Every structure is written in structure tokens, then in C-alpha cells.
Length: 490
Ligand code: HEC
Ligand code: HEC
Ligand code: HEC
Ligand code: HEC
Ligand code: HEC
Image 1 (cartoon, helix red, strand yellow):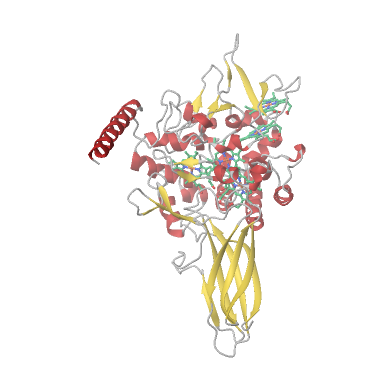
Image 2 (cartoon, rainbow, N blue to C red):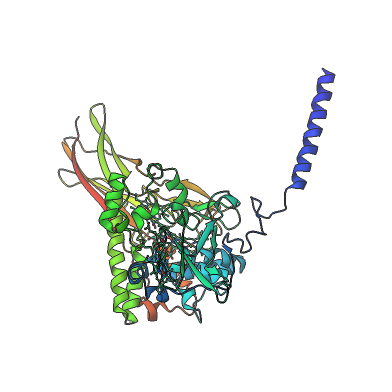
């Protein structure tokens, strides 16, 4: 017995020593994961810049020879990623709350070229070059020479883990090298640039590191679009982000339904998503500034985004009987065409919820759920499908530098579904109940949007630039609705 105890003690002491040695050997780090600071010089951004004498080029120069790609890209959120007033407002708050360092983190995804050259490190637009204002521009994606996805702290793509290399020193003068998916033809680049083929421009890997946003220090996945896709049937069938977001509306629907890739000639530079609000605001700003062409591009994207949202989901209503009498209504929400969870990205900010109303023959309301309150907020008992963020104090939080986990996460997986149940009690003698269900979506809660837009930096004037003097009631898109009459007795 005593010999046993002695052995256990010796083993325990050896374990403690082993742990102490292991701890001493691991590199010191303020974050949860060790970070290779020699590789990631822009940390908390994980972008790497291979600097040569070749500089970044603004989109207007590329447009000279690639007019079509320019027209399509110019109306996209990628072209707005840095000038976006919602982004500028949040960025302003971030730098005030955390300090300058976090600026690199945000701007390496929202204006990568100007971040690695050091031109941009915080909010504000004054005096910046066209390359900086162009956000996620041509020369960002087409200067990506390799990926660092396996060398990040989380060992997944995150926080801009791309390598940017716009060109080479050259013998006499710098040589621009643009990378794309095709085997370069003889005359590729028209004397302006050389061409190189990569294997990742047609894959989700190109999009991954920006569409997988981690907390700048704790590496919690705040936006996990890439990983949601990676673990989905789409990835298994070789359907990548480009196949739904770099094509027109009809082609996206066909891709999602048939699970087959578009044809080569069908690819477009729309990068159309769900943010109809920003397209709309920016179209108004373009109109105000007299740029009619740009406002047309943006309104086209606005319509595409609304249509896309209206193709993403399907509803099903099923009555549930107990002892032969109607007791509950089951509403099933299916994610039929989003290649990731629905909704995705900023799931703790975007809102998607069910509005349900049921009436008996006399018009008496027997279920009412999910109607907006007078102040624009959602009622507390609403059935919603997004996430709630919490900080390290385990309390509710919304800002991306505070949120280090989700306390609830109700998004719907690709080709999957979630069910919501609604109890019904009908007066005696009722024969049937009419149920109306709507799946609704908006970019943010009213109060959150108001706070954010109040924080935009001084050189953006919402009234002057956007014609917004009072924050309007945020528009809601009805993604899909369904009506069904069910019998009260089985
Ligand atoms: C977010 C990344 C991204 C941005 C920004 C971007 N591209 Fe592309 N580009 C791609 C991808 C991905 C492909 C390959 C699409 C495919 O599968 O054919 C591509 C393809 C191309 C091609 C090959 C022909 C074609 O259309 O397939 C050209 C030329 C091109 N892009 C030019 C541009 C120009 C010019 C801009 C800016 C106006 C731009 N790109 C902006 C990602 C990007
Ligand atoms: C890893 C890349 C990445 C980093 C880092 C990043 N973002 Fe973003 N951000 C995105 C992407 C991608 C979206 C688009 C998500 C969507 O609209 O669904 C986005 C969207 C946003 C939006 C919403 C814009 C709108 O018009 O609705 C805001 C605001 C924002 N980011 C602010 C920030 C701030 C502030 C930081 C730094 C604390 C930051 N971002 C860091 C990639 C990033
Ligand atoms: C002087 C004209 C000219 C300019 C300016 C120009 N390109 Fe090109 N580029 C070409 C030609 C010609 C080709 C080959 C034919 C084609 O694909 O359109 C080409 C091909 C490409 C490709 C295709 C690679 C592939 O996989 O097929 C990409 C990507 C590209 N250019 C990006 C850019 C970007 C980004 C810019 C701006 C920084 C730019 N180009 C500026 C003429 C030009
Ligand atoms: C360098 C970082 C970066 C890369 C690479 C990138 N994106 Fe984005 N993307 C962003 C940012 C930042 C935004 C949001 C801009 C905003 O809302 O202010 C965005 C927005 C979008 C949106 C619009 C989202 C919405 O809410 O409407 C789509 C769709 C999209 N990206 C698809 C792609 C695809 C597909 C690829 C790969 C071919 C890609 N992105 C590559 C940074 C990037
Ligand atoms: C099968 C088609 C399909 C594929 C594949 C796909 N998406 Fe989407 N995406 C959609 C649909 C539909 C929506 C609109 C519904 C929603 O917001 O989820 C959307 C929305 C988005 C949004 C805006 C989300 C929001 O609510 O603001 C972003 C950002 C985005 N996708 C990025 C990506 C990226 C990055 C990939 C690859 C990793 C990808 N998508 C793959 C269909 C697809």
C-alpha cells in the first residue's frame, strides 16, 4: 500500500517537472495560440508582403484592357470594402477601444494593398491614393502568389493569410506579374504585365483567409463562412465560392440546384452577396455625386442581392396533433441554396427570423410571433437564426474586438434545416386554422445600425455624401413566405 503511494508521488512529481519543461520551451505569447512573428510581420493581420520594386496598380489602369471585369467588380462590395461608411464607423470605434494595432487587422482585409505598403492603418479617407480607396481591388486578388493557410496560429486560413507579390525587381525596370487561373497565352498581359497560372484562383482557398475572420487576439471564429463551406456537401462536390458568387443570378441558381460547375465563359466579377443595404446606400451616394453609371451598377447589385436572398431558403408547415387535436405547428426552414450556413459571416449582427401569424375562421389571432416592436427591435421571444456574441466576461457583446465566443449559434447548415415550434390553443368549435409564415432578413438591429453610423469618422458626412440625415428604418427583405390551412381535428 505505502509503496503504491510512493510510486504515485514520484510519478506526479515527474509529471510536474515534464510540464514545467514543456512550458518553458514553448514561445511566449499573449494570445491563445503561439504566433510566428517573424513570418507575420503585420500581426494581428496574417498577410505577408513580398516586397519588390513592383508597385500595386489601381483598378482604373486594369480597366484599360479588362473593361468587362472592371464594370462588374466596380459595383461589388469588394470595391466598397474600405470606403463603406458602416466599416469606417466600426473601425473608428475599434481603434479608440483597443489601440492602433487593431487597425492593421481590420484594414488588411478591407484594403490589403494599402495596409502592407503602410499607407493605411486606421479609419478615414482623407488624402488616400486610389489603390487604398479601391479596397479589395483587382491587384489584390491577382497579386496573390501563395497562401499561408497551414502556418497560421489556428492552422486554418484566417485573418488574411495570403502572400501578396505584385511583381519582380526585373533586370532594368520592375516587372508586374498578374496571377490567374488560366494557362497564359503568348501575348498575355499586352506588354503591361506578365502572367502566371495558379491552382488556387478557381478554389475557395483564394477567398478563405478573408472570409474566415478570427478575433484579433483569441482567434475565435467570428465569421466562419469558409469552414462552413469546407464541411458542406458543396465542397465534396467541388462547388466553390466562385461558382455561386462569380456568376449571374440564374447561373448561381443552376449551380446550387444541380451541384454542377458553371461553364468557363459564365464567370463574372460580381461577387454578389446579401448586403442589399450597402449597395442601396452607395447607389444613393453615387447619384448625389453625379456618377450615374456607378449608381446603375450598384442598383443592379442591389437587385441581385435581394433576388439571391429570395432563392436561399424554403419553408414547410406541418401541424402536430395530440389526442387528435391540433396542439402545435412545426415550421421547417431549409437552407437550399447557400453554400455555407444561412445566414453566414457576421451572424451576430445580421438578423434572420420567422414571422408567424395564425387565425381561426372568425379571424381571431391564435398565434402571433416575430412582428417588429414599435422601436424597430425584435420581440424577445422571436425565433431567430443568428448567433449571440459574448465577451470573455460571458456577457452579451456585439463588437468584434469584445466577442470571444457565441452563447447561441442558430444558423442553418448548407442543404440542412432547422425546426421551430409554435403552440396553438383554439376556442371550442373551431374547425380550421390559417397559418402564414414569413422568413425575414435585415443587415442589423435598428439600434445597432444607428449607433454605428453615428461613429463614422469626420471626413465622411452621411447627410452630404449619402443623403442620410436621419438613420432610416432599416429595410427588411422577405426571403420567402408560405400560407397553409390546417384542420383542428386530425
Ligand atoms: C476577390 C478577388 C478578385 C478580384 C477583386 C478581382 N478578381 Fe479577377 N479573377 C478572380 C478569380 C477567382 C478569377 C477566376 C474566375 C474563374 O474561375 O474563371 C478571376 C479571373 C480574372 C481574369 C481572367 C478572365 C476571366 O474573367 O475569367 C481577368 C482578366 C481578371 N480576373 C481581371 C480582373 C480585374 C481587371 C479586376 C478588377 C477590376 C479583377 N480581376 C478583380 C478574382 C478576383
Ligand atoms: C479576415 C478578414 C477580415 C478582418 C480581419 C476584418 N474584417 Fe470586416 N469584414 C470582412 C468580411 C469578409 C466582411 C463581409 C461579411 C458580410 O457582409 O457578410 C466584413 C464586414 C464588415 C462589416 C459590415 C459592413 C457592412 O456594410 O455591413 C464591418 C462593420 C466590418 N467588417 C468591420 C471590421 C472591423 C472594425 C474590423 C477590425 C476590428 C474588421 N472588420 C476586420 C472581413 C474582415
Ligand atoms: C495593356 C493591357 C493590359 C493591362 C493594363 C492589364 N492587362 Fe491583364 N491582361 C492583358 C491581356 C492582353 C491578357 C491576356 C488575355 C486576357 O485574358 O484578357 C491579360 C490577362 C490577365 C489575366 C488573366 C490571367 C489568366 O489566368 O487568364 C489577369 C488575372 C490579368 N490580366 C490581370 C490584370 C490586372 C489585375 C491588371 C491591373 C493591375 C491588368 N491585368 C492590366 C492585358 C492587360
Ligand atoms: C483580401 C480579402 C478578401 C478576399 C481575398 C476576398 N474577399 Fe470577399 N469580401 C471581403 C470584404 C472585406 C468584404 C466586405 C466588404 C464590406 O462589407 O465592407 C467582402 C465581401 C464579399 C461578398 C459580399 C458579401 C455581402 O454581404 O453581400 C461576397 C459575396 C464575397 N466577398 C465573396 C468573395 C469570393 C467569392 C472571394 C474569392 C474569389 C472573395 N470574396 C475574396 C474581403 C475579401
Ligand atoms: C451554392 C452556392 C453558394 C456557394 C458555393 C457559396 N455561397 Fe455565399 N451565398 C450564397 C447565397 C444563396 C447567399 C445569400 C444567403 C446568405 O446570406 O447566406 C450567400 C451569401 C454570402 C455572403 C453574405 C452573407 C451575409 O448574410 O451577409 C458572403 C460573404 C458569402 N456568401 C461568401 C461566400 C464564400 C466566401 C464562399 C466560399 C467559401 C461562398 N459564399 C460559397 C450561395 C453560395
